[in-house]
Amino acid sequence: MRPISEYEPMDRECFEREIVPKGEPAVFRGLVAEWPAVHAGKAGPEALARMLQNAATDEPFQAWFAPPEVGGRFNYNADLSGFNFERRLATLDQLLDLLLRQRGHEKPYAMYAGGIPIPKHLPGLIAGIPVEMLDMTRETLISLWVGNRTHTTTHWDQSQNLACVVAGRRRFTLFPPEQLKNLYVGPLDFTLAGQPTSLVDIDAPDLETYPRFAAALKTALRAELDPGDALYIPAMWWHDVLSLEDFGSLINFWWRDAEPPLMSPINALYHTIITVRDLLPNELAAWRNMFDHYVFGDNGDPVAHVPEPARGILGRRTPQLVARVKKLLSDVLR
Image 1 (cartoon, rainbow, N blue to C red):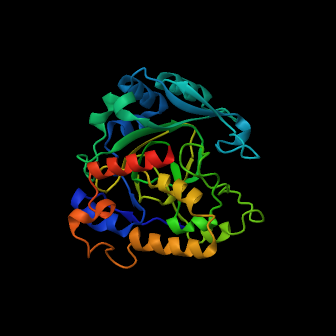
Image 2: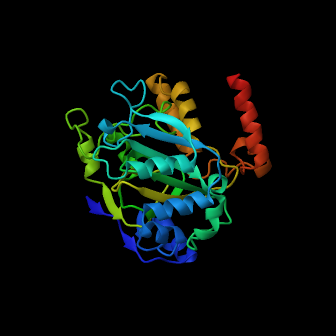
Image 3: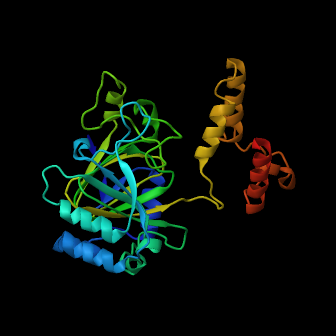
């Protein structure tokens, strides 16, 4: 696999001018090496655990637990009717205690919690995790990830992502968005954690069952990150994450560069699937042309010839317009 391009840590202007417009992943070695949490992690898991506990509230969150035989790979069960792990509520104190007690076990239980909102669950950590490269005045979701030797299956996020390793090495494998056709994605509306995931085990791919995955591997990018390193993942890039040590932690920043109010396009995908996909071929072709014209702009601005006050739903997106469209859709669906 090809390595992910690496850059020196840079300021916000340079990041937004040179990295973001490329739409490609980028590794920044040592970007957050001076975070107190990274220093604590280098002193040992116990030191980092104490620091996180001191910053945390008693508010529980959802954690994942799986038996040793899954090898840390959280996934579906054999017939995709359920999962190979259990979800349980836990406080940070409880999860860290379990993780520390599992250290050194030859076949530990897999334990993991991801996307823990830091402002809600670890408010005392906020001041110690600055990233000058990011514009923190925009809406940004800052989350903690903590666990042992676990494997997060290939998935995508609709937001841009800066993943900063705090403790434990992590291996990231990325695929560009257009590899969707080769990744054999599971159910869209019955997912492990909200995002659709690939059914292929990236480390032991069954190419008889998933033959096109061989083509995806030819496009794959890979990087192994140490504590203090960071990875920029553009929106919609598929990524697979492997934690390489028996205690690991990561903090990530999610943001979207778009005009508010923001809504998830996957809802439009759901609606399109049930209203468009099974039309007759000639109608389907006509609707493809409609989407290309009005949504993807294949023919330029579709309403350039219409006075702005008369553009309706094709006008500038405002909170008022979004509310109007939500009501329209709600009335139709009801």
